Length: 454
Image (cartoon, rainbow, N blue to C red; front, side, top):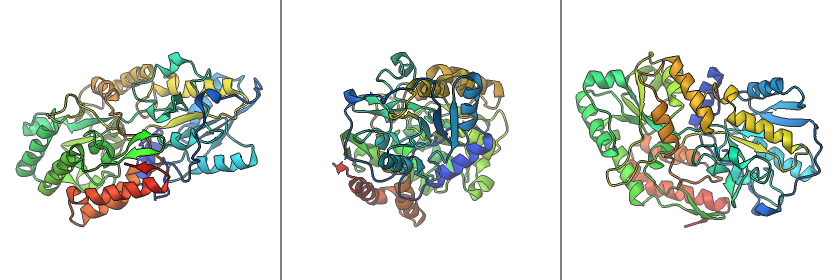
């Protein structure tokens, strides 16, 4: 997820919160674009030929501090597997260590880790490219199709290039409509099912209960929450190094106008949910908040300290004219098996265990991308007793509703939104006023990385 633009506050704060929990893969928050530059060449999917294999040889695993205990648990459960664990940034907090090191190893001809975790959901855009990509196509007799088929629909999309799958997804961060059930019941409000109802309720809240909020627009991941759900063509790849960017599309402008209305009314904040001021003064007044699945434990429980039994989740919203509801995604880490590994069997087994096992994923901090592990994870969430209602049905539903038109790219939507739109909002401009500037910023960044922009 890394970009040469400074990383967004979302990522930094979220990883901080997750680390405190001892939990998971945020960014897991989806986020950021990969480092520059990416080799323009693309490997042929059918051409993958493993290096000479040395069964039983030691594998080197690079992981962040959050994932290292999981790797250690695997090592304990598989004492015959020789593993060297290297703790690194996981490409969090603006780092691009993995790509930088891989580029070095490509030049020296050695040093590649057999397995690597990245919190950057876009890292597949570079790891799958080049004459000899770093990432091995795991669907080429490395990981069984039955395993790959066990992931939630669309979960592996950021890993698929030229028809091959170059990574496994650690977790999902599908968006839902979070709400404070206690406050909604107290005020006599009904949970909306459409964006039109959401806007109407936001206007009503502003009039009847000023100071209470139904959303935020100052978070770096606002595009992934609102515009992705609206099926906005902010970045839709149409071919190799080709992307469509059209923020004047009606599905973009409708969401901009909706948010502008509620920002003007005061029921959508221009702040970020992780700012000290927001946590102190507004956290207790959040009535509704569209956002990722990790908001439940990371934000409402651990950060906002909202008491048990108040927070619930509802299905993603839809516009009345749309046939179905879609949602966005704010996170989800990746596991790579190196194409240079001399022990693909051990590397693949570890990556499979880390992404699919109930023993690890069932107790992780974020929603597993693997469907069977997600069932266990949801059961454990219910056991905590934190939520006002069982979140399982909504989480399972929304995991299958991520709109496929928002594509993984080298550049970070979050970084561009943070540097372009957020300052404009804080200076008094509207989102509608800023769409052209935002589009220009995306277009310029995409072109600088070698994309052809439509």
